[in-house]
Length: 109
Image (cartoon, rainbow, N blue to C red; front, side):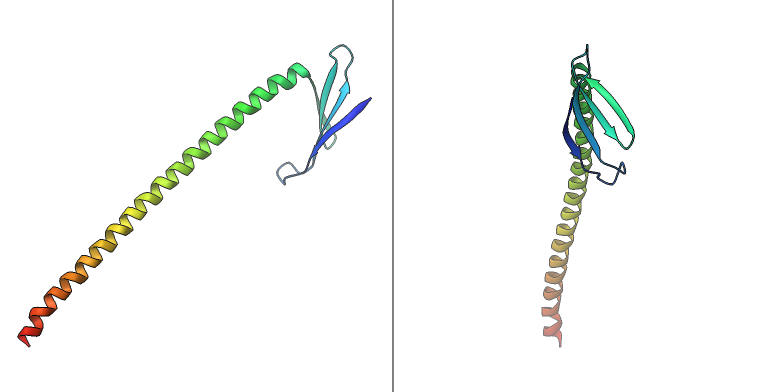
């Protein structure tokens, strides 16, 4: 006897749903079958445990890489913000300097 545990909806990457089904595998005991299209993999509880560790490590590595990319983007954005702020300050100084120059020009007129 088997029990369908969950169906993971197609995300557009693999092209079809992934179904997890538990069943009694004889000597190994309860097992899980991962099915996609007509292909499947059967795993013991020990296999599932090892796979879970590997998948967790994969997720951890990928999220670390994404976090590093995001941090780099944040740093670049901060540099841009600082540059824009500095440009704005320089513009304000330039405008102020022009106003100071205008006063003597008026006096000369």
